[in-house]
Structures are given as structure tokens and as C-alpha cells.
Length: 198
Image (tube, rainbow, N blue to C red; front, side, top):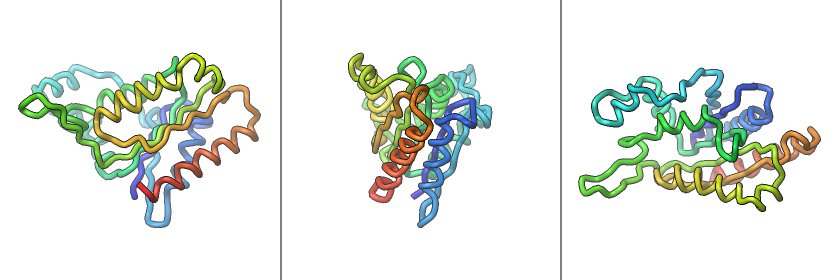
């Protein structure tokens, strides 16, 4: 079992990074390996450029940085995304990574008859979102469902990947450090327990 843990947060001391590090450690060893990818530290460019557009149109090669990310994912059976919730979604850095990497011809393609063919059926995905708001507010306003519809179904379901789990750490800015540490441990243990069965 090979896992890719992708973190999208500019502060390496953030709760998001702690989740990423702890998850990577838990998914390593015992015939398992995990690679931690810090998109901010690696200065991944999330902008969908003219080169990306030319590739999409079949008029140019896949940009080298996108090829590198796809190669990382090609070796993984499991993808873990750790990110803070910005405006009820993922940060632009992570969204841009998905926009540029999960592209036609690699993550999905259209058959000659125009039928969609998902290509990431071998990939299981865990989503770890860190939210400033509380669980009650997320449920009351439908934010949890909005996140799941957009990310679980709209992105990964479209590409054929399996959503193995979605965990949201609520009240991240007001909860005592000890309580957050327990939530991190619970989340990591949950993912680690699921991993061998995938």
C-alpha cells in the first residue's frame, strides 16, 4: 500500500500540517509507504496557464510539473488531502493542483462515442478538512453537504476514485490544544485502520 499525503497550507506549524505529518507517519511501515507532499513548500503553481490550455486542446505537451505530480499519483493506491476550509471549499493552491493534475486523458477521458470513462478507479481518497466553524453551523447551513457534493462527487466521483473517508476537524480556532490533539489522533487512527482494507 502506497499513500500520497498532500497538504495545502502556507504555515508548516498549522494544524493542517500536523494532520498531514501524523497521517504520513501512521501510513508508513508494515509493508506500507507514504509520501508527504507540501504544495506550498514545493511552490507548486496552481495557475491553469496557456500551456495547460494547449495541452487540454491537444495542441501541446503536458507541462513538466503536472507530469511529475501525475507520476507520484500513478504509484499510489491511496490519496490523502489535508487542507483548511476556505469559504466552504479548499484553498486555491489545492484546487489549482486538482485543476492542473486531474486532467482529461489521465484522470478521465471521453470515448469516441462521447461517453465519459473514469480512469482513477484504483485510487482511494481520504479528505481531511480543518474548519474554523462548528459542526452545528456546518450542518444547519448545508456546508458539509456542499463540500461533499463538490469534492467527493464532483471531482473524485467524476474520475472514478473511491472516497474512503471524509473527516472535518471543527472549531479549529477556538478548541483547546489538548482537544485538537485528541481529534488529530482519532482522525489519524481512523484512516490508518481503514488503509489495510482498501
